Picture 1: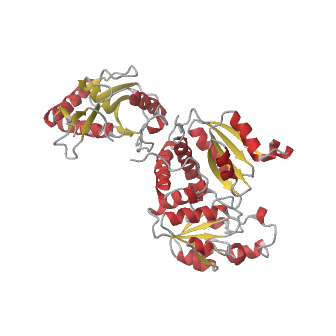
Picture 2: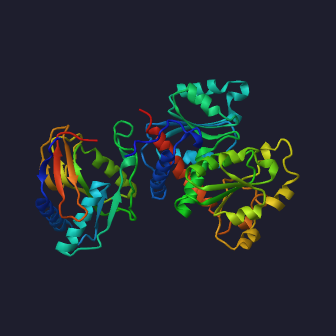
Picture 3: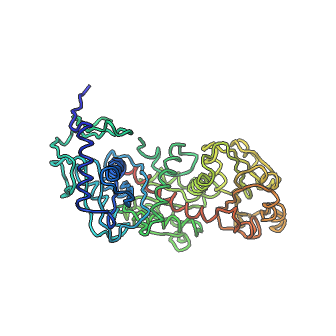
Length: 183
Length: 309
C-alpha cells in the first residue's frame, strides 16, 4: 500500500487557518462591503473554518457568505472522469458591487477557479474578486490564475494527488500527498 | 459516486432505472435554483445543438423544452410537422437524417406513432428524448409529476396516488404508473370503464370506478385530460355526463375533509375533468408542475449530454 506523505499536520493546519483569517481582516476590515464564497465541496468546508476563526479570533461574525457549485460551468464536462452530479448552490444575495473572496481548498490547474468566476458573474458584477486557497500546486497551472491569500505552496508532479482530510470536529485536519489519485 | 445515467436516450420511464430517476431529481433540484436566479442560464450545453421535432401539436411541452435548452445555452432548431416536407411525402428517417447532416447532437421528438423513438434510436447517432409518442409514453411529464409530488410529500414510498380520467389514451398515465411504481408509491387508476385498459392491473395498479372513493383514498389526484382528438369512436356518452360523474370540483374536494393535492398535466378542459374553482384552489400544484417541468427537462438534457463523448 502506498504511503501518503503528510505535508500539513493538524497543528500547522490550525495555525494556517488563523493566519489566513488575520490576512483577510487586514484587507477587509469589518467585511461590510465584502462577502466570502466557498466553492463546493472542499472550499465550503474551508470557508466554514475561516468564518469560525474570524468569529473566535477577531470577533467578526455575520459575514455575508455563500456556497457556489461550479458543476454546470465546467469546461471539461463530457471530457473527464469528473462526476456529473451537482452539489447545491446557496447564494441568497447578489455580489453586485461587493468585494468577493473566493475560497477553494486546492489550487491546481486553475480551471475550477475560472469556472467559479464565470458562475459568479451570474450573481452580479462584483467590485473585485480575490482568491483564497489552502494549498497551491504552483507548477501545475493551465491558466494564469494566482491566489491572493495562500496557506501553503507545494511542488508536485502532475500525476500526484493532494488530499485535504477534513475532521468534522476540527482537531485533526491535515493535508497529504499521494503519488497518484486512487478511485 | 454517480457517473451519470445508465442510458443515452430517454425513450420511456420503463427503460430507465430507479438510480436514473433519483439522479434526474437531484440534478433538477439544482437547476430549479438556477432558474430562480436573476441570470437564469448556465453554459453547460454551449457546444450542443438540439432539434425539437414536433410531429404532433404541443404548446407547453415544446415551450418547456425550448426554455430548458436555452437555459443550458444549447443551440436549437425547431420543426413542426404542419409546416414541413412531411406533407410532401418524406419518410421520418429521411427527415431526421437530413436534420442530423446539419450536425445536430440531440433530438427531442413528439410523434403520433408509439415506438417512433425506438426506430430512430436504432438508426441515428444523436441522443433521443421522447416528448410523447402516441398513446405510449411521455417520460418527462411523468418525471416532473413525480418530482412535484416529492417536493410536496417527501419520499413517495407508500404514498397513495390516484390517476383519474382517460387512462386508455393517455401516455401520461402509462409513464406516471411506471415512474410512481418505481418510486414505491401505490397507484390507483380511476375513470369510466370504457377508458380503463382491460389488463391495466398487470402493471401493479388498482382500478376504481367511483371518483369519490378514489379521492377519499388518495394523497394526490393526478387528473388527466379527456383527449377529444383521440375519441374517434364514442367512449363516453357526452362530455356533460363525464363531467357529472368524473369531473373534480371544489365542492367535491371540500366534502372529503382532508388534505389532497390536485395535479393536471394540462391543457385543462375547464369544467370537464376539472372545474375552475378546483384548478385554482389551494389544493392545486398545477403551476408548480409547469415550473418544475423546465428544471426536470434541463436535468434530462444535461445528463444525457454527459453521455456524449
